[in-house]
Length: 404
Image (cartoon, rainbow, N blue to C red; front, side, top):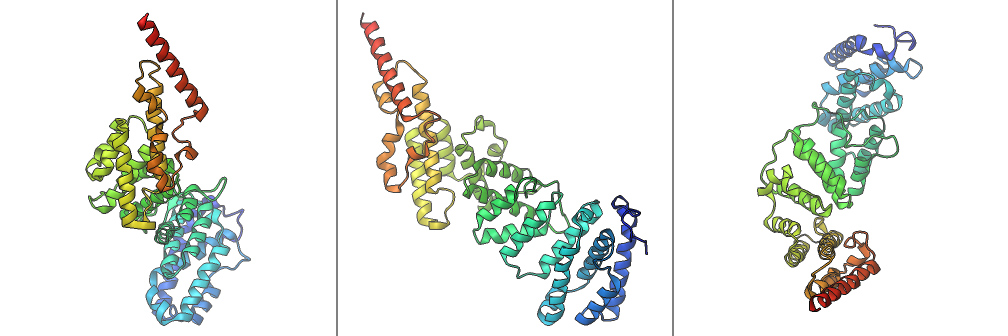
């Protein structure tokens, strides 16, 4: 066995040189113990751990490396289902052993070389499988702790945490993982690599779709839009079914909500246009061609139908989303009319404050577009009124000049 008692002599930078020997030693030990029937007896396993692994008094490098190698070798060998259902005392001891490792391990050591990062991710996956009944709170707490010091490798723990939280509609918790727990801390979306041993392409797709949906529900439309761009660039074939339709629907709405420019050359809209629901596609076309009345009718139709169909489950066309969509369109309408400055017809003048014309429509929905101030584009109500008066004066003078 390589002497690792002194961290000064055996630096972290040298771990990759002797790590294969430690892994081989652990694999051999577990193989021999399995043949002797030691692995499925709690007392025998406890004795093996005490004899084979360093305690807290040893080097943190030695302790961390030997423990993660031993636990991985053991967890690869056993059947989680069998020990959790038929050998409760053994299962409890193995879980306590894994939990104690979280307290002992030096994360700086674990993240010191790619091989150890892979081993740690493998251990995380084993631990989650071992605890198939972990609550979403436990998963969330583990994911947050892991993310604080993670080097940006997506793993099974993060996938499962997001999946469970999404099923429970705990979208704000997912947003917390996406945005990072605090200054200097990691974020789920700031990944550098993916643990291929535990995450299939479909799982990665599902992870990011759940993240994008959660960000949309939390009204973080820009972050949702950017996350969907990640989804569209994943090496996964998006099938033409309900899932792709939902993904593209969220994307189209973020484009309108953010009032994105040059959307006619958006590569994702071009690629997935056939998957956009017809009503939403018409809505998109009306918005960018400034067909005000048709746009409003389509929004309210979609809002009504989806509210009746999905009730509280509906998240695409909520009152807040509808308010912003209508507000954005009112802003475009006002900006177009105010931008003319001359030869504005009387009918157009009446339409400058387009929100007023929506009042009878939106009042039953309890939506106050004025309060949202989306339609103003930086102009106060008084400034809009001043613009109106200026337009009236301008048109009056123009008419007088023509008569003269």
